[in-house]
Length: 201
Length: 201
DNA sequence: TTGGTTGTTGAGCGATCATTCATAAACTTG
DNA sequence: CAAGTTTATGAATGATCGCTCAACAACCAA
Image (cartoon, rainbow over all chains, first blue to last red; front, side):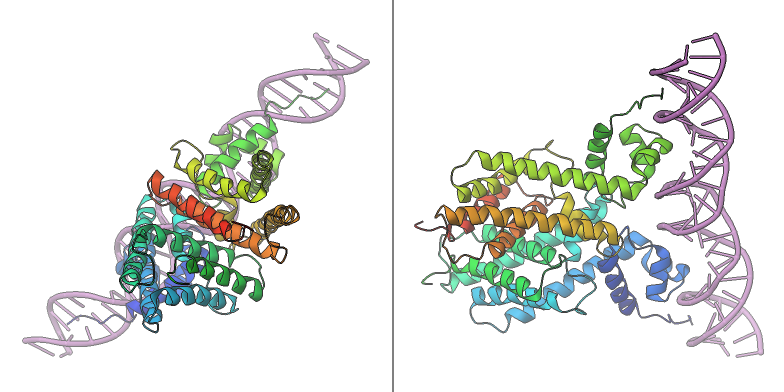
């Protein structure tokens, strides 16, 4: 009976992620969103409810993608700690690509900082996502502990937060005008931090 | 002859720093700025030229204050590395105060992330400030090298960038809902990173 | 075909954006 | 007090903000 939608929801969402990642929440106007998604306001509001709703879904989509990326990356490593070290180096080198992504800094962190005092809903969503990421890292580190990679007395949640801080710092630094070499050195130095948590290094 | 200004420029600027730090550039409207500074639009534009001009001066003022704070802090330490370690812990503990500052994350980093694709002038200003801070840290580390605190072969600019990343990560993490204990642990862990760069630790 | 249902459209809504400027007020000097 | 100079004011500007909705288009079942 009904007329079928002419837009692919996920495709539109991916374009929204790209725009918001690039320009942030306040920096993206509905006019720009209409252009980026190639949708008219009525369709956007029918599909996503509001600018906030669209941003919220974009943030969730971005986070899910990030989680998938991490899983796929870690699947290639027997040693969890080495996998995490390689992950840090990978972030550093991927940020040096010119055409890599809409922005180098993490959309979740950008949202955390931008929304903290202007948009409680988005702020709390960013909080939840970051808490979930911390948990993912903590679980990986627990596995590493069980595999005997790190000391039994290691506080995995605490180390997970240190690791998360490294990524936040690294990706924020990537917004600076550093050379590829400098950024890769930073990735190496951050990876080296994990060495001191390794057993029998 | 002339009518004297009724507003203290520096006082107004301090209030602007507070507002912008709290709400960011796009998140602060002229209406809110008028309220915060207790000035009418005409006076604001006569004094600072534009919203951009005001933000730019506020950012510079914030950066200068940060530089002064660092100097004053370091003056209390004979060992430079220990001073820097204490500095990291100090940031962590000061961020746990409820009423400490308008925001926990660094205004310069907030600006870097917010302005990167929406305001080239502010973005490049943030770049310069961060480069200057990197240089300050590098100079401190050079002194530490001369005092024999760290290895002669240490790349001070590189270590300075690692240190700067730690602060970015720490203060961004401070925007999360972590407990005072968790944040202080993070400060301790970051300070511990410098231990591995110390000679005769 | 036709009737019914849903999707798309874009002009236009009131609100708010950053900014301006004619006017009024405050002060010093003569 | 009057003349001269600078500052302060806030209503009003055009532009843009996020968003709505009546009209239209596209599809399916009968």
